[in-house]
Length: 335
Ligand code: CA
Image 1 (cartoon, rainbow, N blue to C red):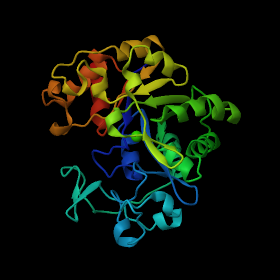
Image 2 (cartoon, rainbow, N blue to C red; image 1 turned 45 degrees about the vertical axis):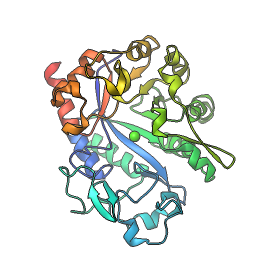
Image 3 (cartoon, protein in one colour; image 1 turned 60 degrees about the vertical axis):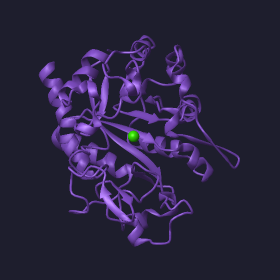
Image 4 (spheres, rainbow, N blue to C red; image 1 turned 180 degrees about the vertical axis):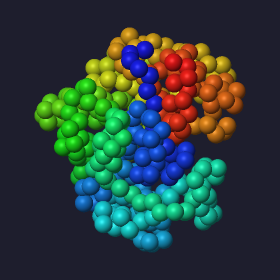
């Protein structure tokens, strides 16, 4: 373990309120989360939104309000809309569309379409966090992720630079500042480390997120061709040394830290946490949810057991959870 173990509010207190709403962020702050997560995507007019998908159609009413504005893939891309247009949308609990019917992804959570929520910018979220730090008298960190940098490069946009400019403007510039900058795409994180941060006079902590290659998380654009990025090398011995050359932490899926990974029925650590710690990397796995269907068999249906396995037995330094209150309580009670 490298320092005090931390709780990262995944998309805010998203177990209780629509993900990435300002309400969910205020709730996570009040619950005592150490860090609040922001996923960042871009608008047509180069503004950064706090939104998980680069599409608007799974958390807003965009399909009703702007019918016909979808691309040939059927999706409403945030990058095709101005911030002014996006401000007209109602945001709600995440849903799926099957047979033309919208169904909440987590039916037990906040009722879909109730109350009023909207999409906000990265600046507005930082101002919320810094405002609460002042009014409450407690510090909390921010944990921004730039989504799909390759896609934005193809759209003629530089999402990494745009995000870093905002961080600099709001005073997040040094390693000791309360910010982790996360991304899946290793080439972009290397560019941030090797070029952008030195050029901008910044030196903040960064996090290499780890995907399974099969997720098709990261598409590289080679001219016209789309290439699915291979993450397999990150599971090989020695990979953590490579990552430590440009990042301060890793953000793996929790199954990646266990022998047998997704198939595991008992929780035995594989080499990754030990190797990461040997290289000075912190380990912050995602995503810890209390719904039974979202927990591995070795948690025995207990969210506390799930947290205990990873915080205390696997030895992670922090974790992303939709239920920050429960992780804060767990750490307080178990010291
Ligand atoms: Ca994220």
